[in-house]
Structures are given as C-alpha cells and as structure tokens.
Image 1: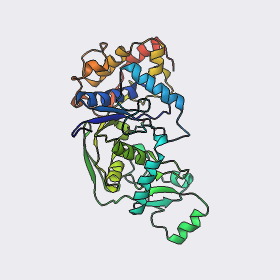
Image 2: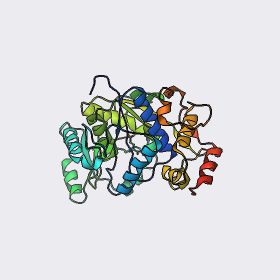
Image 3: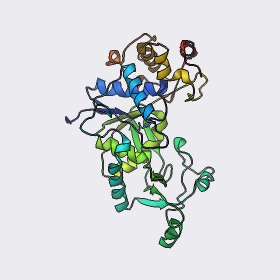
Image 4: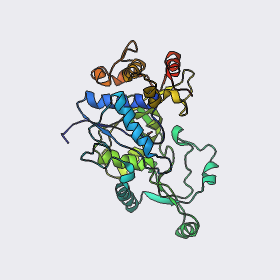
Length: 329
Ligand code: GLU
C-alpha cells in the first residue's frame, strides 16, 4: 500500500436485495475513495450462515456494477488482502478472539434470550443495539461458571473498560461523544459459534488496511464498540463517516419488502442507472436537479459537507415514479 493512500470499502450483507438507501451509501463510499485517488474494496459480510444467501451475494455485486460502481479488490476479483468473504475468514476472527481472551477482555455469558429480553430499559442503551447488557455474567465465580457451562454453551462478551467517554469526529455527523460504558458489554461471539459483526468488521477493516469507513447512519452507534476493539487489539482505527439514511416521505424507514425501491426491480423495469444516480446526487445536495449522471461524472462534485445530517426524505415524486415503472410493494 502506498503511504497515505486512501482505502475505502462497501461491505454489504447478502441478506436481501440492495435498495435505494444501500445504493446511496455505496455511492458515497465509492466517491469518497475515488475522489481521493484511492482504492475501493468490496467485502461480502456473509458471516451469519442462517441469514446470508449466495444468490443475494451475486445479485448485490451485479446490481452495484449496473449502477456504475466498481471495485479494485473484492470476492470476485481477488486482491492482496483477501479473502473478501467473511465466511472464509474464520481463522482471522479466531486469532483475534484468542488475543482478546488472553489479554482478559472477554468473559462467557450464559444469559438466555428470555433473560436478555427482560432487560426493560437499561441506561445507556445504544439506539441501534437495544438495551445495554447489565453485566450479569461478568463477575460470576469459577464455580458458578462451571455450573452454567454444564447446561448451556456461552456467548463471549467484551468487557467494556468503562471509565472514559468515547469521543470521535465523524466525517458527516461531526463530533460524537458516548458516555462511559455506553451500550454495555457486547457480544463478540454468539452462543451458536457465529462471530459477531462488531468483531468481524474490526478485524476485516484492519486486515484490509481500510483508512476510511463510509457506511450507513444506523451503524453510528456501533462505532464506540469498534473503537474499543481496535484499542484492545492494538490496531489503528480508520476514519469514520456515517451516511444519512434515506426514509419514506413521511419519515418512516424504508421497508425491505417494498420491491419498487430495490435496484433489482429498477433494473428489471428498464430504468436507466444514470437516472437513479441522478436522483441520489440530487438528494445528496450535489446537483440542483435529478439529471441523469454516472457515478464517475460525480467525481469532483461529491462533498460530504453538503450531506444533510441524520435522514433524507425521499420525495413522493421519486417513489411514485419508481412504482409506476414497475416494482410494486
Ligand atoms: N454489513 C453491514 C450492512 O450491510 C455494513 C457494515 C459496515 O459497513 O460496517 O449493514
């Protein structure tokens, strides 16, 4: 890697089809890397076997290419930091877990789903992550651990150091401060053996030498957890920028089942990718009108500072056009 070179990435989970909001995030991430003359990496986050489908993974890649987004490294093109599919990176995650374990950061958690569901409203829960875990299993005696281990396989939790607030400067959201212990001790490996997103994403971004994480606003709350992991693993954290979510005209979240907003439906109904990109550029504030453009035409025009904070309402006009064109909810 050239010193100082920007390395960006898009990291979709193949648990469904890409929709307009995912396309927006991908476009911003791609432009951020391309504008800096950097490298763009595509990583398939198929870590959860129960939720991931290889058919979605293929479709996601095809839809991004249709939109005009390319990548220098990825599951289908390879690259020096592969493999680029999380399902093939288990040994990396286990090595990181072993190191965290050896350094005393982890403890086994035997809490059941029902027990966790009963945490009504703990303080410092993170919006995207549910209520904070109150640390029930953190201080179990060895004897108690052995007793519970005989009945249930544990999850592994990361014990938050918890003394200091976490502060970082987000490239879009600005200065972010989370109180000490925000979100509570979090899971790094589930009881069923699946490595948690928080751990996998940190290991991967570090392994792939990512300098700039540009992703959806819904993951802003995950960033303090990831910063703790970078620190505990002795890794250098990247810069973060969280892209506002696209929402319906009434402010509600986009529904996954709304077929008309998927790229696959737009493509199938003959909509030109340039028309979609033009709309996204208009919503981002980079163009006055939604005129057809290719992603490559936007290099030089993209400005993170112009993005609104938090959410962008999709205009009625755009939704009704997409519905007229084909995909129906
Ligand atoms: N795989 C995550 C998603 O599809 C994104 C993770 C990230 O960008 O850090 O929502």
